Image (cartoon, rainbow, N blue to C red; front, side):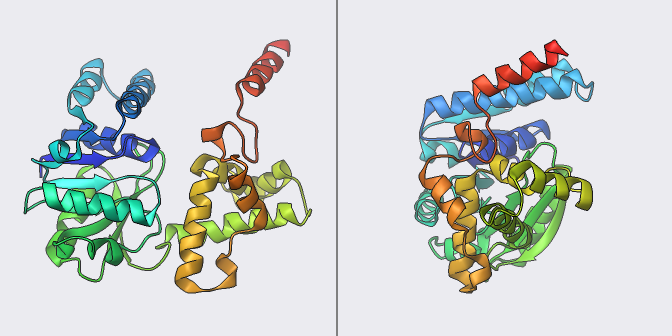
Amino acid sequence: MKNITVVGAGTMGNGIAHTFAQAGFQVSLADISQAALDKGLQTISNNLDRILAKGNITEEQKNATLNNISTFTVLAEAVKNADLVVEAATENLDLKLKIFQQMDEFSPAHCILATNTSSISITKIAAATKRPASVIGMHFMNPVPIMKLVEIIKGYTTSKETFDAIFQMSKTLGKVPVEVNDYPGFVANRILMPMINEAIETLYNGVAGVEEIDTVMKLGMAHPMGPLQLADFIGLDVCLAILNVMYDGFKNPKYAPNPLLVNMVMAGKLGVKSGEGFYDYSESKKAEKVSKMFSK
């Protein structure tokens, strides 16, 4: 596999494209919006600059990585020569099924179709295509260029050949692949999301404040980031979508999203991406922090 197409230039998509391109693959990055593609490329360039500043790559390697990426707003053009397509669109079943139908129609017969879904059934997605044996889950972690884990999820119809090819490719990327079966939330989010939901429940019940809850988990449980701050970075809308998938899949009340999470998403407080979630990420708040730093 040499030619990789990544569908979606958002946080996960541009991170996946960056990772493949830095490993020497030819990457086609596709999105319906040229503005989204430009923003994704700028994010990749900025992240490469950070790696360069740490001395982990050279200027030539940075330029080679960027030169390995081409952008497309027409999906048919982006996938026509692909050996592997990785879908990284919003966590919405109907949208993913539509994208997979198009990927299946326009990509070569030998091409493997992967999804970066963090909770949706691989089997259900595969059923929307005419090549279910070649459909698989590749659940990368954010930030993709840094995080080592990739959950490799087998659908009911995923072939051993497809699984083996993607498992080995993940190692080529410098990742640590873990075999996972197709159940709602897989492993990472089946464990993580109830913890985040319980942290929100703790806040909702007035047991402690946002910073206090996160401090307990960071200092008491050795988590690098508290669950409420992590939820902000994931996106509260994404957390809600994953919990809804697990609740629908298991019919178990423990996966039911807390009302506070539901209300925050309805109010547009989605975390870092919207400038406010459990914490304030607005420009005025950033300026206030800088001012305090220089006043010390």
